[in-house]
Image: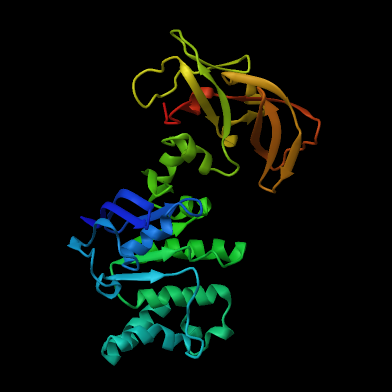
Length: 361
């Protein structure tokens, strides 16, 4: 059963169209991440689903019910914002129970829901504290708990970890994943952080200019991006792009800056590859160094221009076929600027995009 459905959703602010006939289906129990750069419309879409913005056209269904014009309190959702928005004068327990008291929920049920949320989020020792006595991570747990006590089927998260430091974000990211596994509720999560998207999501919807560019599993958007924008947005460091053309012949090749790269074995999206101007994208993780280089369809010698030792791996910057090129090596590798290295990769394992449309070939 589809738990949340967005049909032809359009939102306009005056003459500006922010969302344009957007369609989305989120399955029951799914963790969907809306990912994109600032201004792409992801938080706006979430606010439309929540009922915080009145849409211009289209429909929103939650649990099979048309909620397009219903108030947020009537939609059966719980929402967690980027800011904690806790009541400073209330204890954690008071913050968790405040909304339930206003909704006239019986005291016994309030106590039961608060205790259950506190146990799930491991904030039981904090119930008598006020927000000023909590760390940032603890405050965000309380904010999540305030949504949990509502006992709803759908949770909406609007960049809930953005205000936290790097280590705390990583810790809470794991907790959110565990929380979803425990509850099995439908969750829609907005972020601009691709690491959060890749680690949390069952599916990722990548947005740009109010449109969904691709919606698929993390593995699918990483390995088979639907267009050049998605390929460049997903992955850190970003994918390497070569500008060139696909040559004619029974064994197609990619020609860039007088360099030929064999494309034998490339899985085209539609039919066989045909001669045309194109982009070839190669992930930094696809590059081979060491003893296995000669087994690769394409090999080259490069000069190390810059390197970043990151512990687990080392990121090397160089130039290949006239284009900037980055690749990963083992963190135990010993390289310095000016070193000459032999590298290899399989161009057929990369991604080809039409030069004009930038769609995947």
